[in-house]
Length: 540
Image 1 (cartoon, one colour):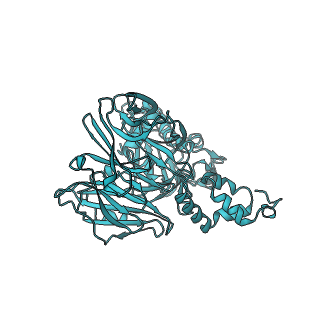
Image 2: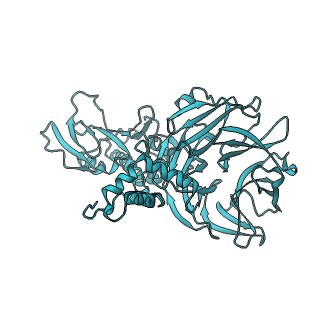
């Protein structure tokens, strides 16, 4: 950072602030390296609020996003790939993001508002919810401890999220329905990022049933879901974010009794589409909240479209349908005028999601986590796999061919620890040096205590490592980047054989590596030839 030439001598600070507020978030962050004055401007809460409000009112070049589930090279678990695309004919990829993979299998995108996604896995018997800003690699894990006390698995949950420029707040709404009772929600809760708390919603809620938990569409700062009514016509349920009140929007008479309807955004307008077997209909409300302005944009009967995702106008003015081909496991684009499918070179093993995203400085605070890069994620995976592999190799030193030898990989979510334990001959000092990437050495064999330094490249993964091995029975407690001590174990439990490595994971990384299926898939990915001798979640 250079201060030899102070920018304020040439440009007034308020002018610099105004210019910076128009930049994309990634460029705003880069600008903090120019000088201390620019850093001070960006770090001000007033500037961050000003930028978020401006981005909300004047979004810069919205981009399409695609969440495409992809399988690991081996195993059954899917991982999610997030890509941003220009809205051209081939839907060209402009960026790919490593998202906070804190989910057991894969996630759903509830929606995005002013630069922030809400992603969740509530459809998979979990209450995990994360606000994520990919532009600045920040995310916030929404606390759900209070909700877990009232959710027993029998309720149906519906989510929505929005940005409030009046209060500079990101908010999440959660509706709880009894799965078998009347359609009226049991209760509604609203989360505020500003206060980090959930509050009860006490205003009236229309008696509708919202069947799709992650299908919100935002138009005119209102959230929209398809609402079924057992005692009357179906409607679009709208939630006006500014006033936080619900209302119903009538559907076109031709489709009011259709059971399968999803809200959509088409050319900036509220839209709905129906899809029954080979019949597709797209209706657009040309004037918001004007029931008379519903117009049918598309009625199509075709077997070439299996699962519609999004609709758009092509450069020639015809309607195009993005859809997922389960047979080909890829995303396709169907041109309704030309009646032809075009591949987009976007692979996916399950139903993908699409939508629009705009950039902002949302979540730019010290309280949010930073998403690790793909290189850091790969480094963490390889580190864990290498530890298991070393223990597997130590089994080759077994004393008796009649004994059964194995490696136990034991995740403990309660303590955020991952224990790797083998019953072989134990790792040597050199094994530990190589696998834990320790700078320095253990010292001479006569020393009782020796100083080591563990390499800081795994700070994003680990808080601490404890290693106990029958090779002279050492105990090591090390933290990334710090010089600590390694001692001979004089008071601990005597290991009859083998090595025990306990990894204390950071809170924001624990869920990545403490699920049995995820661990099994990860180890099969790197150690496929050794899968018969390691056991995940079982202490053999």
